Amino acid sequence: MLDGGNSARLPTQLVRGQEIAASAGASYGAMTRLPGMLLLDGIPAKGQDVASLEQALRDQIARLRADPVADEELARIRNQLVAAKVYERDSVFYQGMQIGRLESVGLDWRLQDEYLERIEAVTPEQVQAVARKYLTPEALTVAILEPQPLDAAPRPTTPAGGHHHVH
Amino acid sequence: MSTKHCALAGLLVLGFFSAAPALATPDIQSWETPNGARVLFVPAPALPMVDIRIALDAGSARDGHQPGLAAMTAAMLTQGAGDWDADAVAARLDAIGARLSASAGRDMTSISARTLTTEPAYSTLVETLAKVIAQPSFGETDLARLRENTLVGLRRDQQDPGTVGKKAIYRLIYRDHPYAEDPSGTREGVASIARKDLVAFHQRYYTAADAVVALVGALDRSEAEALARRLTKGLAPGTPAPPLPPVRELSEGTQEALAFPSLQTHLYAGQPGMRRGDPDYFPLYVGNHILGGSGLVSLLAEEVREERGLSYSVYSYFHPMAVHGPFLMGLQTKAERAGEARAVLLETLERFVEEGPSTEKLSAAVKNITGGFPLRIASNADIVSYLAVIGFYGLPLDYLDRFNARIEAVTAAQIQDAFARRIDPTALAIVEVGPQTLQAHGTPQHQPGG
Image (tube, rainbow over all chains, first blue to last red; front, side, top):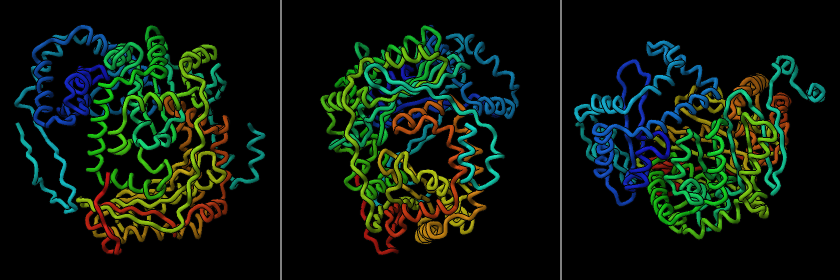
């Protein structure tokens, strides 16, 4: 919903619509042995500050928790995934990696054959339910990287400038 | 094919050819569209999809006094075309799972697309792509947004010593040549781009005369012909862009030190190298593989990394372009050992130019390159990239068929001869980016500019 193509929510609403981000994205690793991380990232557009961008990203999460996604959004994503499954087969390397990755995290490599039908079965209510379960304020960490002055003095390796906070 | 190999066998280092496995290289078909675009096509019926690459002689070397113009024109293509705005273009493509992107390098603008060949995906993609190429809207609002976002990107580039160094080495090697500027442009250039500039650039350089259409996918010949015709129909035949000016050799060594508050020093050294289709391409390519093109086992890696532990990564490469693209060497190292790393880098180059490769190194390089070649044409995505390059630079259609044989035909003497003629270690451009850069060498330093 957030980052699947140029018509997903982040490019449509944050980069184009509100013009709050020069770029914005969301990603996560579906196949990790232990719980992984869902990462939203962005760079503020000119005239926007980090706080507004952070709020806009938080609003996107809040919306996923509050409202079920529209059926047409789900349909679009299904079409993208069906196409992506065909595209994947262009790369022998990637196919090998998929099989190896499933096995290496303790899953059955045959799961890849069920991937499409399992994705197609996902409902708006399920998306909302996992957003409510996992995308909680208690689980959120925010990191901010601020540009450093280019005054040619090497910086210490421990963070000194800028503020960084953990929620 | 076998007679061709036999004719070359006399030049071979004996033993390799008989060991080489038979290689299935793609059968390239080529023709022209009615309005003069060149098409290269490889049928790939195994998967219900098609990869499309359109290469235009519209790279940043055509930017003129507005560095960043070609890149901005390319980026604006998907921001609206015909009656569709940016959201509509994105929605049309995402609804069918198609992919479309456009970007500009120094020589060419590339428009890449991938779609299923099933309906409604195929027709939707073709209709969208044809319009995006021929009738981009270049809307003022979208331009304003993209211009600001590009400026944000250029400012971010200045925070990265590697990017700062890479831009600086091109400027130092190419000076007043159009290759000097990075395709992403300069702040002044990007800020100056108006809608009329995009329209004029598109009108001049997005022409059928200079377009190459590369197609790989589940199409038969007549379907591919119809597709290429459809995609280029909206382009004016136009006239070819003028040839780029020749690149002047550096007459002496030149260096630039850019102070940067990093812990590592980034070092780049280079000079004008070779063009696509260069008569010395194969000896220089194989020679560079030995010198610095083969990762951890290259001569540079042995000397800089294995022997002295100065750097995790050190490399060299030729980037062949329409006119002489650069020969570049690079490494990153601890700032206080930058002088030593630089000396080792330059000595290794000098020795290689002087002595050429050993037969063992040559034999290992040939095996590595020819053995790895099948992997480089293993996917439709790989092949469509090669087709665009072959078409754009006018390389022979049997380029891929003959590639391994031509690698195998390279001798140590040819490499030594080519490097001696083409690489002058006394006339290198050198850029160091890092703390207290080059002070030890007595070079004045200044802040990186935009």
